Structures are given as C-alpha cells and as structure tokens.
Amino acid sequence: MDSESLLLSLELAAGSGQGLSPERRAALLTSLQLVKRDYRYDRVLFWGRILGIVADYYIAQGLSEDQLAPRKTLYSLNCMEWSLLPPATEEMAAQMAVVKGRFMGDPSHEYEHTEFQKMPAEGEKTFEDDVVVQVKEETRLVSVIDQIDKAVAVIPRGALFKTPFGPVHVNRTFEGLSLSEARKLSSYFHFRDPVGLKNKTLLEKADLDPSLDFLDSLEHDIPKGSWSVQMERGNSLVVLRSLLWPGLTFFHTPRTRNHGYIYVGTGEKNMDLPFML
Image 1: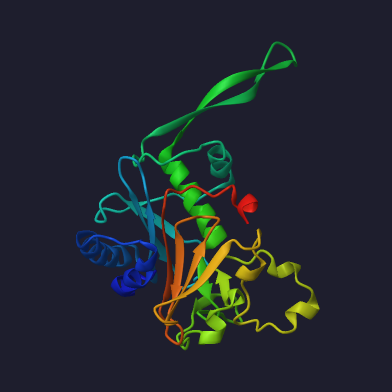
Image 2 (image 1 turned 60 degrees about the vertical axis):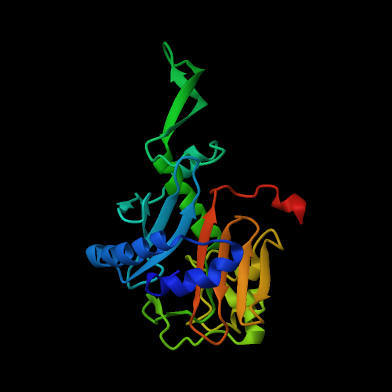
C-alpha cells in the first residue's frame, strides 16, 4: 500500500484483521516520508509485517520511476529506524529451502542445518561428509519477501501502463475498475515482471492491449482456487485474499483509485493448499 494514503489503506484492509496501533501508524507516517526523501524514491510502499516470536519485522519497499525496476526493501523493528536489505539471489533461496518454522524477530539469529558436501581426499577421490551450515535470519527475511512478491503481489488492470520505450509508469488517468470488472479475477495482475505472457499464442495476444495487458493475470495461477475474491461493505470494496500465502490481502474500491496490498503473517507458505482445494 502506498505510504501517501497509508491511513485510508490500513482502514480498508482492516476487515482481515490486519491493523496497527495508533502509535505504530503515527511512526510509519513520519518515518516513511523520511525514507522517501533520504533514499530519493519515486514511491514508498508499506509492504506489511512478518510476525516473529520475539519481535515483528515491519517491511517497506522503495520504487523508482520505472515501477517494474528492482525494488529496494527495508525493514524495521520499531517503525522508526529502517535498514536496507540486500537483493535476493538464487543462492539465498536454495539455502532457505530447508529452513522451517517461525521467524525469531532477531536479524542476527542464525539457523543451523546439516548438508552433505563432497570433500576432497587423497588423489582424485572424494568422500561425502556432514557439514553444519549457518545462515542468518536476515537472509531468510530477504528470501521470503522475494518469494511473496513474485507469487502474490497484486495490482488492478490499468493501474500501470507501459510506454512504447519500455519503462512502466503509474497510470495517472486510472479511475478504478467497474463493479462488474472488480468481481473478476482476470482484472488483477501480478506486480512483477511477466513470466507466462511470452508463452501465449499470437491468437491469444490479439485481444490484449500492449500498454495495459503486459503482466500475468491471476486467473492463470496454479493451483486453481488459490485466491478468494469477496465483496465487502455493501459491494463498495473488493478484497482478494491469498490461500497460498495466508496473510496477504489485496483491496480495491471500485470506481476509485484506492488499491493496495498488505502482508501480515508468519512468512510461511501453505504447502498443503493443493490437498485442501
């Protein structure tokens, strides 16, 4: 959710129980404006909160003028002091694949797991040995945020437009989806670089507007049924909830520009979802 409309966005997302105390709201309003100024971001999004056992991580993201350019991610434990996280890598994802359970809430906490690694022996022979590998919770935080962004970050169709030269900008003329369109899962896109669009045939691409339909639609997500679409407040608010990453809530007020998403959860993926549908 955009930091410029933070209070309204938090109120619209409150139906899922994702709220913040007045003290936290006041701290975020001030600190996110300072983050935007100091780091010279075009936009700052309040991404959400990852619940830890000792403390919670509050997450914000900075966007450049090109909305699909790599985002800068920051975290805070008190909503006032923000620390920049390194970009996610495939090596981080491989290390974190074996780590399970809740976050501790301490960035310096180290997880330990055992790996089989080939060790050199005399001559050309090698042997396998158990090696204890330690990884910091900060690395796990980077990896989980990247996974959630790629899987369930959402924007409505038309909120962004692609210029003929390539960059993607905020669509200032976007006035919201109609009530009928807001009920359809096909009206919402993944807020990341497209993955499945290049696999479409020319016939399928013929009906697409290249300036608006340049992202992957949620209707093609696997497994089918991983999104819950509900109308609230007398059909004046549409809410999407992810069943794959419980805690991700997207909201949009039809016929207005108000939209955004927030994640408040433990940072654990629902691996049992295919068996629950």
